Amino acid sequence: MQNNLYFGTQNKRHCAAEGAANPWAGKKVLIVGMARSGIAAAQLLCREGAAVTVNDMKPRESFGEKLDVLNDLPISFRLGEDGIDALAGQDLLVISPGVPIDAPVVKAAMERKIPVTGELEMASRLAKGSLVAVTGTNGKTTTVSLLGAMFEAAGKVAHVCGNIGYPLSAAAMESRYDHVIVAEVSSFQLETTETFHPLTAAVLNVTEDHLNRHGTMEVYTGLKRHIFDAQDESNFAVLNGDDPICRQMAEGLKGRVLFFSRLHEVDQGAFVRDGQIILRIGSEEKAVCGVDEIRIPGPHNLENALAAAAMAFSRGVPTPVIRQALRTFPGVEHRIEFTRELDGVRYINDSKGTNVDSTIKAVQSMKAPTVMILGGYDKHVSFDPLAEEIVKTPLIEHCVLIGVTAPQIEAALRKAGYTAIRHAASMQEAVETCRSLAKRGSNVLLSPACASFDMFQDYEQRGRVFKEIVGKMQ
Image 1 (cartoon, rainbow, N blue to C red):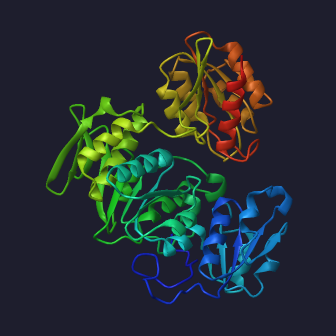
Image 2 (image 1 turned 180 degrees about the vertical axis):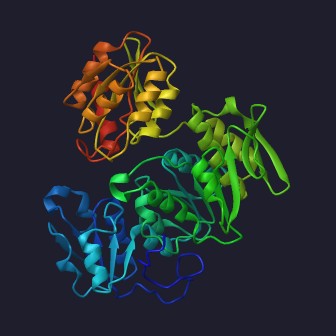
Image 3 (image 1 turned 135 degrees about the vertical axis):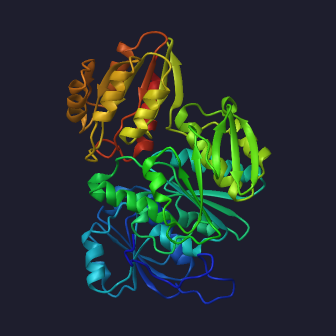
């Protein structure tokens, strides 16, 4: 995905060598998008001596106290405007992941020959340490968190960052040359990478998502594969051997390809044999642990565990350390997260289920009758596969629909022959409806299959609201 939207000098490990001239000092940089990554980018570039201007369409008061960390820095604020006027005199435009490459301010910058880059690309040039990275439609947060735990158990300082809520720019300010940076990378961020160079990178899976931004599956798939483009023969490319799109990605890669599979043995990578996780790179083969020893449940988490194990092994983490991490890692917040049991009903927060495939995996993980909450922001995807899975899974006894996509999800469910449908106008009403429908021994599952932006700031806020409502019930 060569966009030629980059700035700065190529260097050996994405950061200037010690004692080298600082390419950012004195540069006039406009940062557009003041979410977490934009704020961290401003802090990092100020540290590097750049003259920073920050911009967002939202006015200052809408941020509350979030921008207060920038108050004592030499920063110009251009808030409550589209950013085009702020381009005058700038040497570089840095965009946050939420700003698409076809945004008016990006087009205006390119017309004026102002280089454009993303926060991830910029930060990767300044971060120190060994970089590994994970992308894919689902499983990214669990995999990078588990991988970080493996590195930490091996005695390394690991910065788990990127699209996980802790920006790479923030990690770059803390990183040292003997640290490991474990980056979760989204397709939005990969739109603007050019020299981003993970020593080991993985694509976990590719299913339909974010077509409202990327337009076609071909573009979306190409962006995922782009994570490997700067690699060389000494690096590793880790791919899901059970995913046909991922298997096709292996063709033409420069890095050494490792597959992971829970269904069949692979020549190089991670797989399951007789209930045991096996790692094989080159002629070295190691048994790690039994599948039943992995603490995080579900077949999708077995895939995440295999991917993390293959990545850790490729970076020299010993198998006993990998084994211990797999046995002890508890999972991540908002991903099939047990919240509370009340009146014999288990409440499960899967707010991170922001697309159809992710929610299908949550449905497949249910072991008891379940009432589930679905719906949210429209990403222009089909809900038919989810409806078909729900019909195939008699444990899903009722669906309570919320948000903008509620009519679309209802249409897909009814098309598949499913009629146990209710609607709710808010999360509070949805949880109360679920409580009235759930019987003792059942689950209430929040797994929306949609982004959250129609009703919430992000999936984290949605999950917290769900947990707060459940926590207050008596």
